[in-house]
Image (cartoon, rainbow, N blue to C red; front, side):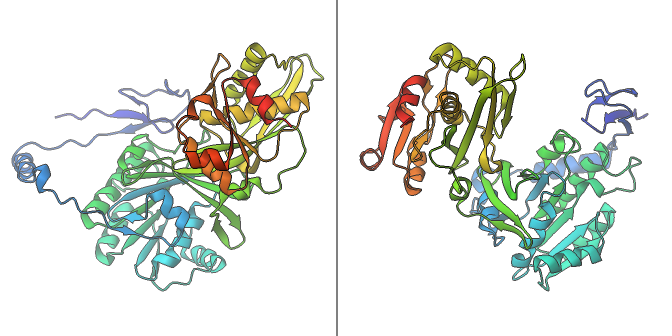
Length: 456
């Protein structure tokens, strides 16, 4: 039977029955690569596979439901993001910008894992000598760390089956090559098939495998989207080059909660975990200065306090300039429109700048109120009380809507010494009596009442 080729875009994964010079999906040129799908033969082998599949069926009640064994990495922030440690037989994808610290954090956890486990570090980008030099700089001296500089996937798989290490690290998946596939390293086909082999290896032998993945210019993981579906856990390393802080974020985790984060600081000795990120983000906060307000955002189960700074000044051009760092630009524009229409704070002819200190990004709507307070404070040149915290979602009608985990946010603020908290009115009834006694709670229904409550 004739097998038809398919053409897959190496940039976005778009599939087509014919070749295009320009990808119809992402408009990139010369990215369509030929791929010949594998065809299963019919006959005795296929019928045998069908019988084997039927024989392996089990009732749900017969499946062992014991709690999975987890391997601690020795880095509490890393274990938190993984959901309590590494699950045996799991496939973990770690991605991030170049130079963000992916290889550094993996080499650092090898020092702790090497005390009781054997670790095989497979590098397709560095030589064994380069890894040794980096290990010396990071203080990694364990005798149970083995290094293999190889890119041939089939050879790597056979080596793992022979050596049987406890943990395997692949750095990186975009450099891995299967000889039977004609496309180059990093192509959609090579990345997908290589990951599939490592996935089956991890499940069959019960060996946890870490895979380092590159990102494209848009910040997404390079390669096919199916790569994220194959693995058990997807971790992103985030951070700005101008800041020393790095955030490890979980966006997929089959063995734990998602959206957990770990905070690290890049030093000369590698990545050091930050146990109290709220205190770090608020250090050096100016006093008696307009245009600043403290926000509380939930990162998974962890509340983090961050300083939001706004600067509103007269524009020297016909069109006012808007700039946002650490907060969604479109949402900031929406909040400015709400402040003008519903609250009477006009930003016409004013340049507006917004910054979240420390390189943290605020994603959830609960940060709306603190952003609005910082902008109004700068516009009116009125100081927000330095011991005040504000959070809440702002609707298009100017109302302050309720948010989740309100009591957990207030408890974190109390621990750091804040004395007043402005919250949505509908969250007030659910607060415990202890919180109401120990913190000055100000429930508000709209933006203007919120600003009147936070100014001195």
